[in-house]
Length: 288
Image 1: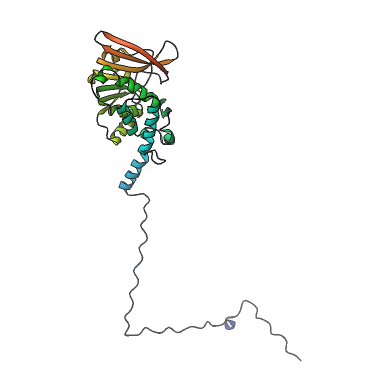
Image 2: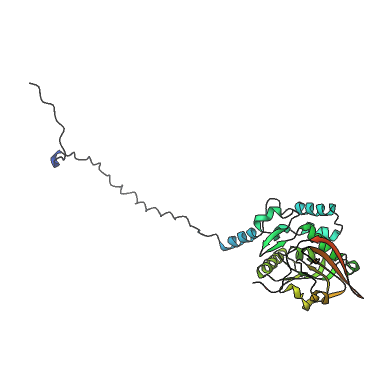
């Protein structure tokens, strides 16, 4: 009779059926060997949720000035100036200023790639930065005044409508002193910051009503306006020095605007009308 097959034990096992685990004896340390000190805990890496303050300030300063894409290259500005020369601009000091002032610093970052195209661009608050060709044309007319022909630079120029500050920066390279008035406070603040960043010291920016001019610094050799009204304010005429010139857009009696040049002579005022333009309306009052 064969033995019956041995059956595996059923679970749960009794205590006496469990295998006793084999224990390896631990040798005591050699009495001559000194005990090894516990390892020093490794310091966790220092987390920096924010950059050091000076680094953050440097990054913020760089982010305010749109760069890259060749916009900060002097050759880009020179090409713009040469295009204007080819279109008939002849004033060498003005061409040098156009080649020097970084227009891309005065436009919004989203529009920086268009900074050196001959186009106007929005700057917020219903205002625009004028086309380079229009800015150059108006400044050239201003420089061709009797006061401009007397010396290499105009003594004092009043700009009405600072906007982003680009035209004021150009004028600062062509006149000994520039006073620029802006009625929209955020635009005034932005232009002031750009002047400081570019180190322009001979341009005084005023938050005020440009239709009133700026009597404290009058009289002016030149007055230039970046907004068009139905007529020239009397305050501008009163603050114009003999031999001085006003260049401003004015309505021609209808919906069209034209560039008007007014010269102050010994006998009064002489007015000439030039090409059609399109500027934002000239308004009074202050905007916060």
